[in-house]
Length: 84
Image (cartoon, rainbow, N blue to C red; front, side, top):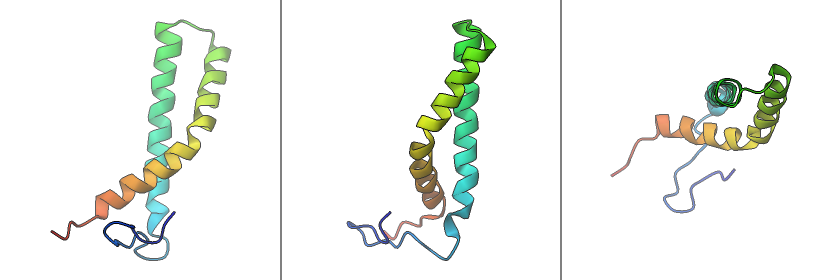
């Protein structure tokens, strides 16, 4: 991740450990994705519990890197103060 924004020169790392809270945002995103997958594949498509578990685990692994970046972006936007 860049230290500063190339467009507006905003410093992303505010202090040491600033993005620790993004871990909780990432956890929330992962839980929401898992629950949505459970509802879709178990209730609407009516797959067996073992297949649903395998699908949910696969989705969690594949979306892990996306959640990492997205949660950091969400966390920084919570504290971003527009300088305009």
